[in-house]
Amino acid sequence: MTTHVKGKHHTEMAAASSSSMSMAPFCRPQTSLKFIEAETLWSKFIAMHNIPFQASDHATKLFHRMFSDSEVAQKFSCGHTKTAAIIKTLGPHYLEKALTDMSKLFSVLMDESKDKTDKSCIILVHLLDTDMPIVNIGTAQNLFKALKESLSSKGLDFRKCIAYMSDTTNVMKGVRSGVQKLIKMNAPTSWMWAVYATWLT
Image (cartoon, rainbow, N blue to C red; front, side):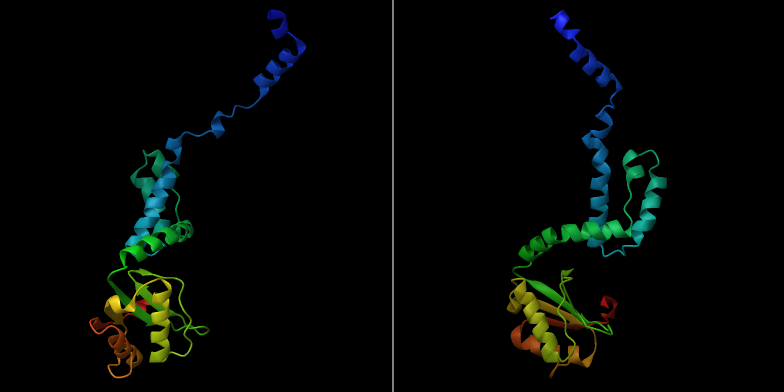
């Protein structure tokens, strides 16, 4: 056995091993990934409280100063670009959960954009659905059709709509020929609010 260990092959392998870089630095312990969990929680907080993504740029620097003795805080680096990416990645999971939660009752906030090209019809159902329909001719009939089709595509029964909110334009709040009138015809028990909702655009 002693002769075998002292052989040429084993001697060369031992020499190579002593000069090779250890793999230990590349095998980080699980605790070192805590900052990823922190960045994910922060992004969820931004989305849940409707805080501008730009706040993340300031928060990263603030956390470094506030928690200077924390390894997690010092590794935290979640600006507005990463925050948006994390929220977009988590979106499908929470959309599915939200649609399940809203299967009985829900409310709607609606506004049309003022883009120079395609004019998006923005619909808010508890959370903003970025898969917005295009409505270039903003008549009450077209807007209502886009609203109804958007909800139906998500499996929501329009007859269960309990509230509707929009801006104060005639096409939206018109009680005779506006979107409000068409909604009342399809969901008679829903409540109507006319609000200044142009912040959506």
